[in-house]
Image (cartoon, rainbow, N blue to C red; front, top):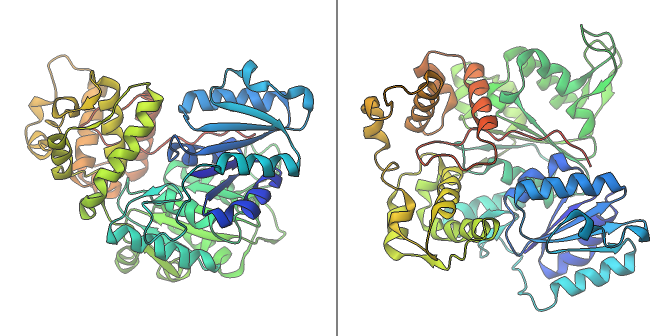
Length: 464
């Protein structure tokens, strides 16, 4: 069980950190709806969301967000105005209670929620869950241990692993157990931002700096001040921006686009990439001096095929989540179906397994997941299907769908490596990213087909 605490004021988060640490409960503090997506995606039915609701429209936006995300855990709304008590009934939120903010009431709430529940094991070396991460294999326990050691200091951390292995969850866990956990966690995805806008989003800009800059704007380095800045897909950053990033990492000082005044920033830098940054530095596509600055602590995330003993735990975790979300009374998995999943290659890693099980839960007819429900005929045959594209492209299929399937098959063949896939397809990495984002927007809210690798998630731009 873990507590997800949504509170821009951080008051509830400080109380949770003070009172729940001795119980071994994980605490994930977030400051806005924008930062809530990943913690909710990793949450289970036993997890608890505590949300500070200071205005009526905050509750409306939160209710809509929870309904869209299918959160099935217990929710507590902490209101400042006693007249807002009972807000959950008006918002139509199940498994939700409201209480007025006070230190005494929050302490009583923690005591009540913890009563009668199993005590969580604090050490990641024996626990199957660790701040949203699931596994008990030797490889993943080593990752848990490395996260704990890295979080104890303030050194820059670089997370390296294939797409779909959970790099962003590791970044969030690093922040959640660090001394900066009460500060903001801000995410910047290099691959999702057009090159012309990346500098402005990183460092901010002043009014009139360029056409369309009608007001001053803060960048992610300012937004993350006092907390953690997570830069995803670091190796996709252009060489000019790598040079500017190096100066900030070295001196913790930057200048806004169009500005002249140096601005100090106090951040913990965590980066992630699905390419080996050392090999990229040796090949000259990534600055070696920047590599040695950002990779003070390297965390290599193993692909799912190297930690197959964790598959039953992950299957149980995702089945519990989606059975509750889709209201399906699933009591387990047929042994032969589990054996089949254990033998599958999973080139899309945990993200592919999750989507695979989400689809199975949606379409299952009984209360036991069987081989018939898993639709595994496409997964082992992925390589053969790629060699016989005529089986995938039926006559009359729209060209856009043909392109989509071809791109996703190519990604599957190279185990999610977007740079390699772009080379094979004869397009730029940025062009590939735009297409994947378009596919994600098209199917948002639906489980993708089992032969597809889920495109990068679309981040919401909402604040609470």
